[in-house]
Amino acid sequence: MVITLIVVSVCVFVAFSLIPGDPATRKLGTEATAEQVAALRAQMGLDAPLHVRYLTWITSFVKGDFGISYQTGDAVRSLLAKRIPVTFFLALIAFCMTVVIAIPVGILTAKYENSWPDRIVTVLNQIIMSVPPFFSGILLSTLFGLILRWFTPGAYVSYDTSFRAFLGYMLLPAFCVALPKAAMTIKLLRSSMIEEAGRDYTRTAYSRGNTIDGVMYGHILKNAMIPVVTFLGMALADLLAGSIVIEQLFSIPGISRTLITSISNRDYPVVMAVIMGIAATIVTVNLIVDLVYRAIDPRVSL
Amino acid sequence: MLRILDYIKKNQSPFFRIGLLLTLVITCAVLISLFYMPYSPTAMDRASRSLGISLRHPMGTDNFGRDIFCRVLYGTRVTLLIALGTVAIGTTAGILIGALCGYFGGLLDEIVMRINDALFAFPSILLALVFVSLMGTGNLQLVLSLGIAFIPSFSRIVRGEFLRARSMDYVLNARLQGASHLRIMFVHILPNIRGVLLSSVMIGFNNAVLAEAGLSFLGIGTQPPFDSLGQMLSDARINIMSEPRYMLGPGIVLILLVLGFSLLGEGLRTKT
Image (cartoon, rainbow over the protein chains, first blue to last red):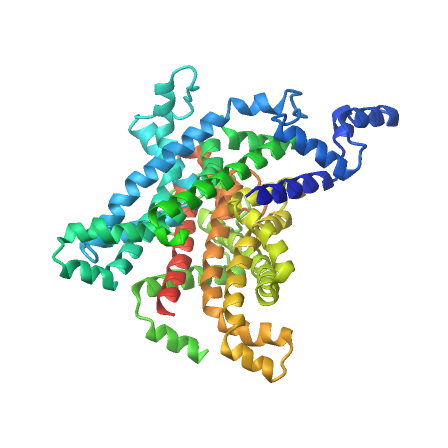
């Protein structure tokens, strides 16, 4: 886990150091003299060799100092501190929605395999998975915002002003992020349950006189959830990616929007900090998934 | 060719059939548009601004007087090209890396797969975004970024397959006959894993189309005049209330395109 993070940090650092264009020159403009540039380079620590710069960067990073934004001159840390909760809640709500929608629907479609509702859900699933998230976002925000008027697009309320209004605003964006993930989860859970239902242990469970529901929830579901948990763990990383587009669409000031603006402004300290933050989140989530795994599948710890 | 036809006849899965139909119709339309396009997709015409749906303009015209149907055809072409480029880069590099790592194993495998895992953890649209920020915007850069972003997932799949094939009897047999490593990797193993490869290429293709649409929406997609479907969609967003028609054409075609490929991939996988 730590190794992965070190690899990412080296890749990120080297990649962003190799980009043509010198931050000191950019900061001073083209009219600066060579001495001025050299002085600023020394001040920013850019004249040191690559590995020294990496070590300085990574040690201060671990200590919580993420550097200073080229664009605003503020500390990256304070810049991101306000935005992290926004993306966190967006991802959290979206994740909860995915689970709440997908698991019951997945179970029901597997239980009533090949019935009409099951077929409709299967077809809908395929279609939902083919829609780019921003397109469904546009359609849903038009439907709820401009036609039904349940939702005001662009009327974002910060979470420190009113947490309830903030959550209310986040529901629709989170739904847009969750929708494709939910479709994939339903599909996976359904096929996984149908597969488990054909196993020998299921037949044994029935022959011992268990009820259909008892076998369904006590035996099949437990085993069918294993691949789903892996998928949901990976989906959490994807929810972050989905939030990039959705934050832009609903003008939510979260991490991903900062990433986009910093990329277009070439504000590399911010970009690097965001990437490292996302990498750390993903690695942590993977660790949690491994632990959950151990809890639901005793075979793993053997 | 005959074998393909035979396969189509045998594969009765409705998913596969619908997928094949959708893909064929869209590909044919794009191929025809290479030779015959009723209106230029870029020529603006003041006289025919914002016309409704008619026989002359099956999807109407946009606010610059451009025929939307032709623009959609052109956009599909651009989208397909970008997706093809992406998949080509992703699979070629992915197969090379995956084959070398999976077949030889050892320290090389350990190091490359560490890096690969680190990259794999990132969602591909995010990776592409990072590469675009490194290389700048542009059509070539876009294809390159998307292509590189897809390498980790491909090489992971290929590596797993090679690792499994390495100790199989037919590989050992070829080895005993004195075949070189390269020959075993690309003449013996590669054709045997084509089923897995094909379905991951399909998935990769879809992801490329969706990722490109996402990037276009973020403003770092294709550059004019090469408007992809995703680009058209995000351009049409401004007029969504007054002219929802602008969005419908590209939107539906994009969805059908992705749907077609995913059904095709699904059908291929369930059959093999």
